[in-house]
Image (tube, rainbow, N blue to C red; front, top):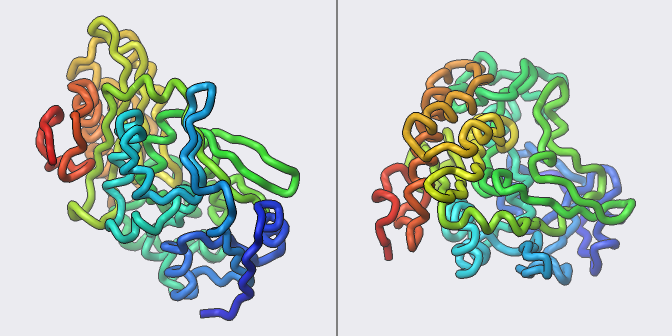
Length: 351
């Protein structure tokens, strides 16, 4: 591992000032960063430890009905918060489907948003990877790529974003609060991550020194609590990233879908909001035919980036299944296998 400086600031403003320096990165739980450093994939000059900054580890109910989640709240604490799980069940289900219990206990909300791709060529320093080294090429294009992107990819990069947590957050219009050199600003989570284009090394819109301090769910996100699910297909049921995933949330009134939210994971370099599919579902009955049409709309622009054409059909089927599960109602308790297609049918009660 490359030698580095270690800085432990006392305030957010001190952290931003320290991280503005070239080669600096923020350290929270480090569940992704430290692995990258050990493999020489990431070689920072300075670690800015933010784990002890006050005010970033709170879950707050704001006066306008929104929920503010501090960037240092752990994945486990958030998923197991009773009010959170009742109000945002698809987000809780997504969190509990990711990694192991030990990692969820350590991993933070802010770090989850910014975790790096799990593309094998990104991790292999002997391979060409434009994301790791700009302009070097992309060995994934002609390599083992069955798990790579089918939406939004470019000739420069076909990697996917690995987060489960981000997918339902994008569907529910989550907002990211950022502290930077010029003060605090907010952006929609859907705008945080960038598609690769010709600059895949630029993974987000964050600038030097920018620190994510919180994620906020708007009041309207609670309106979907009765009909919201997250579904994830992976190589094995536990401890694996999604091949394809989908978050579906419906607001049903008088037997018709008043509003729909849909996002996909594992298909692009960012969580993929399927707004065209949402439009198809507005003001229609929650039927199999409607869900099939929405699935086709969601994947209209999909194309293989290699040996992964199967992911397009798989994504369509996962969208249909997620919508059907959401329409049948959020179960009283999360399934014993959260987000798994092998879990019992929606509506069953699990201990």
